[in-house]
Length: 495
Image 1: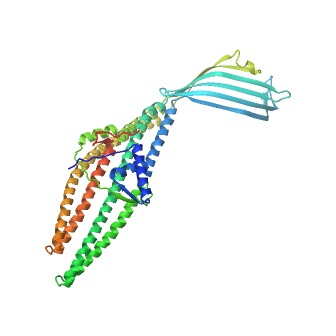
Image 2: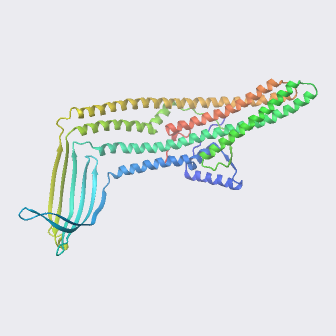
Image 3: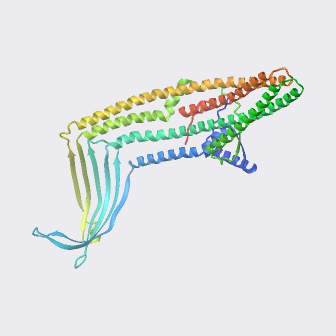
């Protein structure tokens, strides 16, 4: 018995070559015939299927979300301004003696700001460096122009005692992105699982069609012999009618099998990104798996590689974040603002950057809750209760995940053993039918025995195809859950 080779080809070059080969067969054969093995179908699904486009788009979306997060920790440079802001109004103007008089005013403001800011994830503060240039044009009897320049102003804003969202994002977002990359590989493996199911669904339909064709041929032969025997008086009319009815049933089964084959062929073609007009012929995988998968080894690989283990950790961190946020919002809310820079105001532009003077600003604002009637305490207790609930749900999910891996391993090992039995049963049933059919032709076997042999032959053949489907599907499902190739004994890694 040959050892199974669970081939897994996912490179772009091999996928492209396969597409070119299929396209060439279309061109040579009028675009109507394609021969596919299981590995061919999986490779096409992973390179050309609409489902794969969806998988790649999800990863791309997660990638750009992660880049958005990373940009929060990089310097942001902005240029802003107003060019110009014209204002012509009548407004109160304070006089030298303190009185106010309504006077017409006509002026224009122009401002240009260039600044760079940087968030500080460790403290949740922000530091920025900016430069500003302003101009005012006063339109009176004689137009006057004045300038204000702040060549460099450094500013620091720091919340005190507050919840630091940047700190938690820095812990959670990298895990979330790593989880999305693992999820991409799992989704790609899931495409293999779906392709395998559709492959064997069509293969079963094609084998059923072959069985029906053979049954029609053999039943027609038996019917023709029965007519001769009836004319010779060797069988009763009832026996002849029974043969004719069997032939009609065989033709009906053939029509149903061909319709199922057409529908399943269309379903597989659409999944693989084909046109649906191709006549697909599948190659039966004739190699059987001989290796067993150890349950503990599979669980270790799943824990180390699966996106779900990272998601469990993310959920725990989210629970801790809720508690930290509730506690941060219940404490003193204080903000420190300080800046230092240089500035100059003048009526002559050329003098803006000479003899500049410094400027400083320090501001500490606070908000202290005195009586909130237990609101802060209730918010903290609610967050802690939610965290406890999250921990319990994650623990249950982890247990379920482990059971899922154990079941997947046992399922694969059982299906592998069942496949050996199904192959042998199919071989025996085929031989038995051939012998029974030959003996019937010489009158050594009655019709009932021949019908029983035919039914066993058909059931065994379909059972063998189903056993193949179960073994290969369970193998790819195990790969998808563990991100590990147990045949080649290496991780399934994607760029």
